[in-house]
Length: 272
Image (cartoon, rainbow, N blue to C red):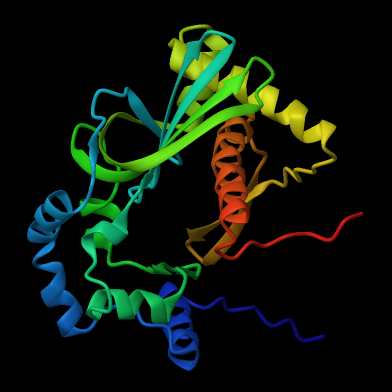
């Protein structure tokens, strides 16, 4: 009997193979020179945003972001307070469109890409990283334009009033899911994070009552090793689901507004 040793591809060979796939699918990592030129003027773009848009100064809100620890494209920030009869949720969504000239090189490039493409070795971003991970990212202790949702909820977590507007915001902290969960479990979390658990739990109950389904599958992460890549799984922790409920809340209110106005595109599921 002949025994042959298996040879695993090297990291370089994996990367070359992924590059061939990206080439075949016409997925570009870099942006053209005209886009790079527009990116060089991002500071001026922010000035135009402030000058031409009805923007509210809401840097007073104690927003925080909650993401995986390595994330730099921070596109959502949260805060909540108690109000008579319920809660008020502030949810800021990063506004990269405020930096982009309509029908300009960057706008056209992102429309052509459509999404960020992920491969085991790296991702090919929808927006240039200088925008998504820096200029437009809701990084802590810097001013950023955002679309701000202000959603009043009753004591059961149901929306009773919704407002949204473009606003200048300032995140106070870049938090990870694990550290927020640890603070909540240890009883050291501030009221903002305690309300995330309270509101998130209430929204989960409303989801059950309306027949909604959340499939909490383990997260998957491709991790490089000495012989290639391995796939690691990690069960979601409760704070991830509570945070997802806030995002879903903003999406549902946006959907209701679009239905009322008769505009936009909505993805729906057939009735069961």
